[in-house]
Length: 120
Image (cartoon, rainbow, N blue to C red):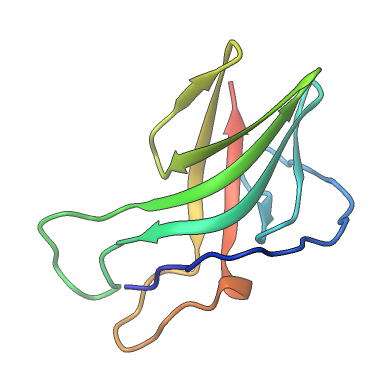
């Protein structure tokens, strides 16, 4: 299981990427527009307990990503759990996919993670 450990990290000022429907992946520190003035920026992988590819598991596991959500006039940092919608400020935010998949005997580097978010 790869788990990111924290500390102070400075994120570069990356341009906001516009989200194509259901397939726009961004890395840690890269903001993505969710439309309507809302932006999600994944900051840290808090947990990655997904089942490895080719292994049969009782529980599929999950990914928890500390994510900054910016909306019109507000900003909030939340832990988004893959596949579980989180409602705040009148909208649902969802981490719908995380790449790469977990593989036995291979740790995922923070720089290799890619995240796909949507908003209702």
